[in-house]
Amino acid sequence: MDRIIRTFSVFSLTIIAITASSFAQSSASADANIETKIVAGITLSKTQDMQFGSIVRSAKGGTVTINPNTSQISYSGVTRGQNMSYRPASFETTGEPDYSYSISVPKKTSLSRKGGKQTMDVTDFQFSDKSGHLDEKGTDKFNVGATLSVGPNQETGVYNGEFTIMVEYQ
Image (cartoon, rainbow, N blue to C red; front, side, top):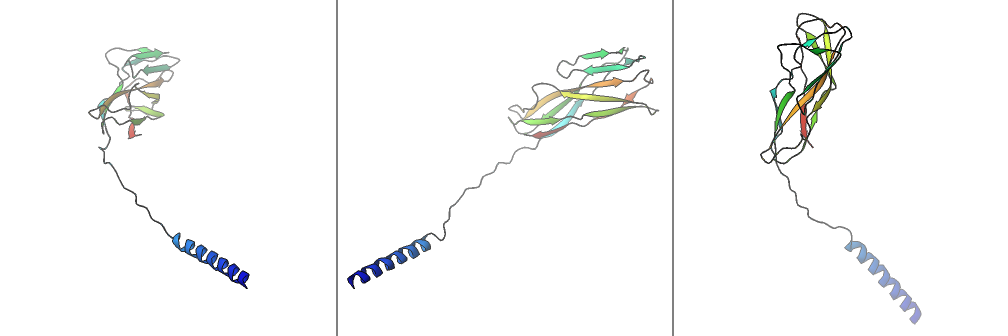
């Protein structure tokens, strides 16, 4: 009988311990802090348009490339004409000081001849090295160059078009 009472007592104590343990672990909580920082929005403004200058057409056509780092121009298959300067496009970015940003350039755009239907493609857009980081005042400047494809015996005249550059924080 003693043995039955001891077994029953151990069994009862085990059930009570398991039940108490279950109730003790049925819920828990913890606190977390919340923090944010509001920063200046990023802006972009054009300071100079791209200009390929005047080009002498040729029977085979060719390309004209503006280097965004050196502002130099190179010709292949065509030559430079007179009385018109060339230059890369220039932009200024403003925003949060010491922030990095990415620059998106188009893959291609077309120039159309004023008063006509002829076109020329502009491709291989590139921005100047060392751009993509705002200085301690929150500004950065960069140039954009590209390559103009001139067709064989391209129709003479003035060609123009536009392209879009986008910047965003990284």
